[in-house]
Length: 198
Image (cartoon, rainbow, N blue to C red; front, side):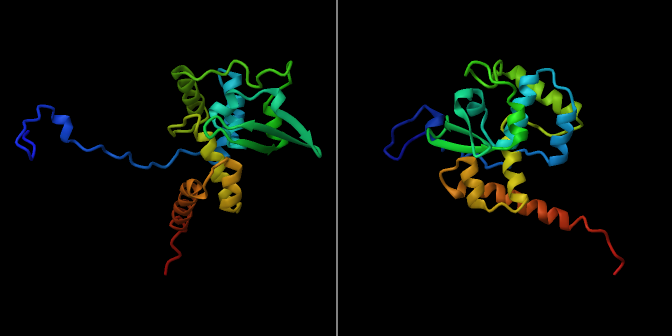
């Protein structure tokens, strides 16, 4: 290739512009699918508990993995987690449901809540196997738990600002992608209404 100054550039990649990644919809599960996972055995109990915990709290894998019992307290009869988000480094307070607390198991010496949880390709495969055993034919990753939580909130009428705060997003526009998913689900649902013969 010859540049505008007549100098030959032998590197063909020097002229290639970077390609922007497409924004893709995150895989999420319906409440019915989450219920199927609850009923289905998983080879690793800690993986099952941690993933369901993500579905009920919206926490990322990194935050679940480092969660200590010292981060958990009780306030007015409600269990609260206080932690620094791994990704954003911001302090987050999250009141959790009794269901979510139950998934945490029994406290052991103020150590990690989900002991034995490891991020690996093997665990990702086990997550997919567990989903397939539950009859779920979606490409589920651990982050799908966070997507499930967000879609579940918005589809039940929680406003986008509150959902954004619960997810720990610094800007509401980050949460907007979930709102777009809800709109597409609503449109799809409307087209499932049967023909009435008009």
